[in-house]
Length: 172
Image 1: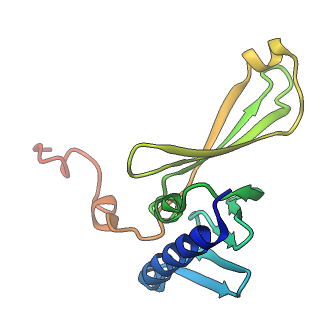
Image 2: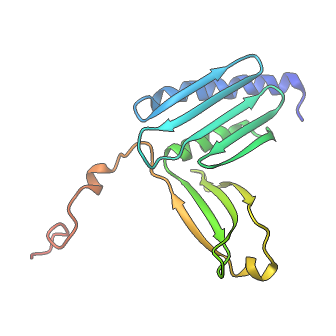
Image 3: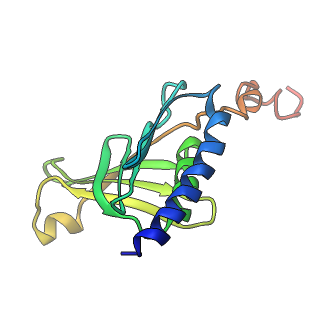
């Protein structure tokens, strides 16, 4: 834990930076922001149907809660304020994978995890055990991934072009 005066100064700087960034999302997400003397919280609900919702709460008690898609963490220690803006940006950019590991024989879900690929190459993840399996079950488990779309579809013009030989420039 950091001394409270240092932590509170870093808290104020980090939340001010997040507050400056949030208005750029008004056209792509419902932004629910709340700040009190005890915490700062934001929830982003994307307008695009397959975007990943996220909620982040930072507290003056040096803990945070994070919910990304269907997974979440509560009362985690805040160790590095520089993580939160890149984490939110990566979710907005659609760099989130929801992975389910299932037993090969029974298809029973063993674990679920959220993996967020940050712009600097790091990965942030949370993994939850749903059903304990044997060592053999876990070694043969299969993964199925659900990926999320970016909130802002900047490449929509490229994606909407017709695909085929004529679009590739070859004569038909």
